[in-house]
Length: 460
Image 1 (tube, rainbow, N blue to C red):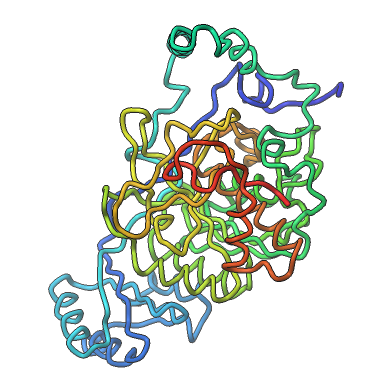
Image 2: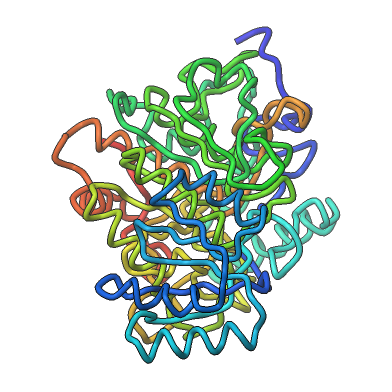
């Protein structure tokens, strides 16, 4: 296709075989905000709130105003925000007074649990995978040569090392009409576009002026104080592009979007630094569910320890979504260093009622950074895998317009977009039925269930 224009990071064609190396987007978190997440007893909510009212706290409730306005009010004098749909509150108060109020609420059976408010991330500091750009070209070529030699020695040449190396070389960029992820998941052969299905992307926002999203965004809200929904970070725009990018991108870019006919909802729950917290994530979830979004994509998370239980607050939100005919799709996390270390699925993807997504490469091999089930307790499962290595999608125009990224963050919107295709194909596929359709129709790619779940997501 003569005349194809490529982004600055696209010098090696789709697959990143040359030029700039793809960046890996860590999904993980660490630290707390100093506030407390309190789960109220829905049957005795007034007794739970009473303990905090006695402290003379200023309380904002989403029953009275929108989630966005209530969130903003917590930075304008309010000490407590109550998300009525979920029976969850975020409280900022003196630690000693907070402990006393929680104890009183528990004694009155109005408070079920309390924990520190966590920080969630799309990208930033923490135990994320090493960026491939940080490895020298000589190191990467030497590493590949060593692996090829070892495989050929073990298999007596059956592996075809030279052929494998040729397969890794990028195709002629002028011949590429869609990304490898769309081909591998059967999207390019699907007759569905996600038309009529509401897909929410909860992330760092979106470049609303990007040519590939003109007229596509049905609704958007920022839950980050003092920041608009505009994405200066890039993570959210990239994820939105994969899930709902256009059939024919601008500037002759290859097609990278799955559900190009879906109705796109964008909730900014992570800042331009890629950081959020329970209050921003929960506010976004309440908004998306109240808007009736059938698919909600979350390429965000907080790292957890091996055998750490899932968060019951997000499990209840996941159950609420399934009952409402919605599916929460979340990234499993990028903390692994395979083969020497495999990290557990992060929060909130480790909840049993949230659809957890691992990442694989173009050869159906699990990505070295992809997290897996590492617990004997309920939860922490991988449900499915998606394309998550060398993924081309949209980026804010200020960052080049398009770029290659890698991570479970990139696999998640592939799954969310394909979920929208299934939802369009059959009005009965909502909530748990949609979950079942994705699992039932996944393509078997081998590997352990703990790593890839049912296999690679596959379009209807």
